[in-house]
Image (cartoon, rainbow, N blue to C red; front, side, top):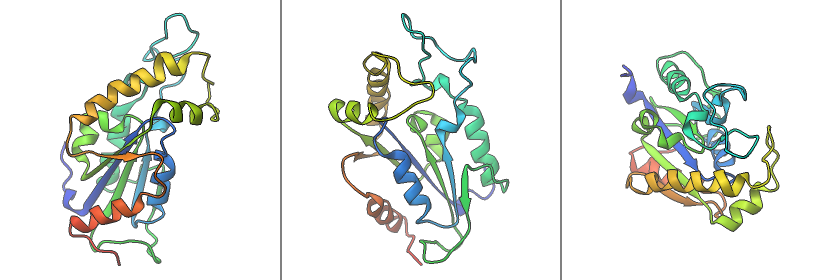
Length: 203
């Protein structure tokens, strides 16, 4: 599906490991760029009782760490609708103020743990970033987070980490995706530098 005004948009994909800093980074970036439209992949999980979910064998728990647990067609449709003029974003702002703007351009951010593993969205992105962490750091961070439904014992080792490694392997075969260390603070400067390389300057 084509967007008639595609040249007016800069689309940024932010993906990667759970608890790697994706959402915090995307939110900070959304506060830096304008006009901006932010999409969070987590918004598109199917309901817990959806037949789309895959139950983990031996656990009373769905596998929420695979693409099929998310309504990616709806996310993609909402992104396209927004690019055509109908705001479907989870957050949007057209305020200029002191933020980074590019004359005649709009920014769209798609954020989520497998958002760049979904090819229709991947193909839309002008800039692509993937956060990585080592197992121990990721496990420590995740143990401090509360999920609904909560992780059951063994879910991280059985599903979260193995699925991440599978999706990360796909990402690492794509040279257009930039890997970011989830332990490095405030990587926004990296994105701003990449925007400058696209010929966009702050105003």
